[in-house]
Image (cartoon, rainbow, N blue to C red; front, side):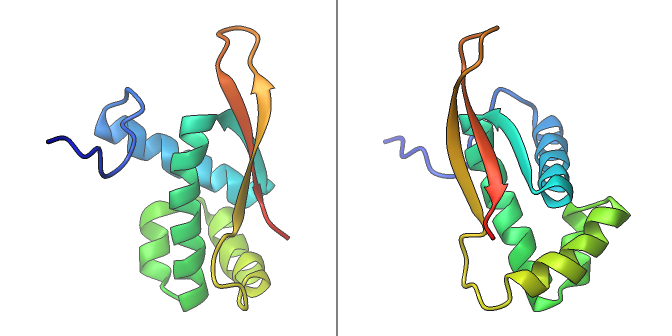
Length: 114
């Protein structure tokens, strides 16, 4: 019996998927929003929520394993951890933004909540 638990593979190898999700999470932290496809948005939301929660707890090494960029790392601890210190979760919002013209795939905007 197949239960489909876990995560989306997104038709990528594990190393490609990990690199893509960490790059997207870094972009969300730096720019506070990105536009991507809906399945990728749902997966990157898991990564961003976990990283912000770890930053709130002050776990520098766990965050460093995911976020490699120094500017994003500093912004995470100095700005975002302070902004969300009283919020228990739900730091991102996914808003569907229509269909991409080239390949007819549904796109979404992933934003950090104020």
